[in-house]
Image (cartoon, rainbow, N blue to C red):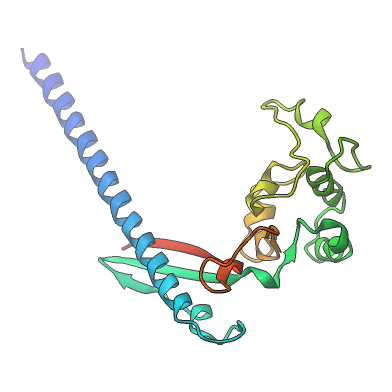
Length: 202
């Protein structure tokens, strides 16, 4: 009887702790969601009230300090995408891309792989890759053979990884954009601006 009672108490305690963890996670997710929404709304407010004829890094949107809200901290970063290299205009920007890859100490062969991902044909460049390579992977998919919709697509290209894309100082996301011809201003001219949000709780 004592053994059975002990097992029952231990099981009940485990169930209670599990429920508590789930509840805490749900609350945390809800709080971080509202922190992100607050950051986005604040960023939109700054952009809507930006009356300068041209963008520069001395404006309010470029110098947002982290702020505390509801027991959490929000860090908002707005980046002017128009100052970056457009990866979808690959042919005219290839020389600049080669220089960028040299500075970042990235293999030049990755440039051929990017070109093959964007161009419309299925003929691989010397260091590139087309459908034959991508469908041979463990989790196969087709080469896009079209312009990128987002810079995040680079992760799907041969030779790319998360560090190359997202590194805080040398990540390609800091230097490239994927703006398309159909990109229209959402808020004044701010089609060329993206937001990066980070919310944390003490």
